[in-house]
Length: 491
Image 1 (cartoon, helix red, strand yellow):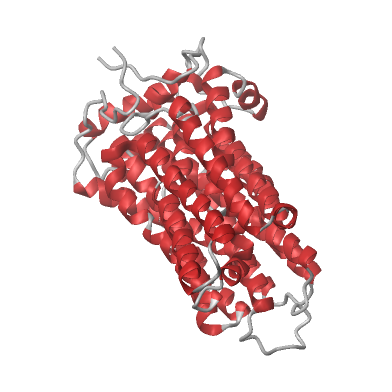
Image 2 (cartoon, one colour):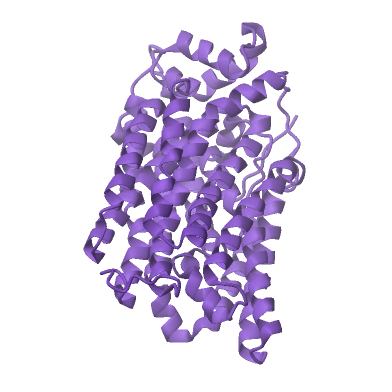
């Protein structure tokens, strides 16, 4: 008997943890939440810098950055997405050998150093270099965050707690855009965000390594004790069932003859990626990344202030940008409460459909509605609704799928490749967006992207499985069936 596509029921026994377990997991993930917030700040910083060039509140006409060309702005806005794949590869290799905690320490030092160096940026070339470094940090952070959260959370909380990752990512957007809207000084706005990596350093003192990583290194007893702490100092008996499940999940990393834990090399992980249980989810995530990035507004992000100026928004474009990023945060909140009820599949398709329709409507209004205060508000509100819908479904769910779909032996490399693909797609979309706009027109880009979004909904309907309330072991086993569709069996 097979589960229907929309089923979110689980055939696993409840592990029986209480409220203390939930608090312990939230505390352990706080460090990664702060890191992902810093990644969001790095991602949106070029938008603030580019927006400052055309901001009529900026009266420093002697600023060497006040006359950036369109080509220079496109590089500043896109390089931050070109170098995350390098960071993703570095994190994939680093966390395999050093563990998540040491990767977090390295990243925190990089975050603080980058903020300090950015204060001396006074040429386009300097900004290119800093944008590249911030991109490396983003890829590094995203990769170890996805992997760590997926391994630390218990199945019934994994979807909810990983949704919070996206909330903090866009909280980073909101933080720096709001600071700029208030101060009209992008350097001061970025400097004030140094409190985020400092707070992360404090929480890092008590952050444990993943029990699954410890198991993969043969540190079984340490893994058991860590799991008990992550479950609110639960008894060994109450953790037994989940711990046994973890052992089975990581068993493919053991020597089949001696049973001893073997160290997985880069070559081992690469060849394992060619197996159906890794290759099928990787291909699916590559395709989903393209559609989701389009409908998440990625091509427009570096040019948000210019987009709102084109809409002729009645409010200042800096404040409109802050509202846009604020809705990205607010949209994540209902997801925390409804993802376990509606499931990831339904939520993904419905939110992508809403965003697609909003884009199509913006394009139609821009072409056929005479410019007026009403048409301006209509376009702005539709743009706001599109990002609210995307942040409620497709955006957080993409990150969750990256941590859920890969088996243990390729989890770090798979998450790294998926994360790298995400950022490469972002780079291409942001670097060449202005070329596309110049070629087909501003409002035609919304029409084009809207049709892409509807195509993505159709793809999801036929290919996207439901993973809510499934253990990582259950999800991994079902990719081994080599079937074109992923169904999970129940008793």
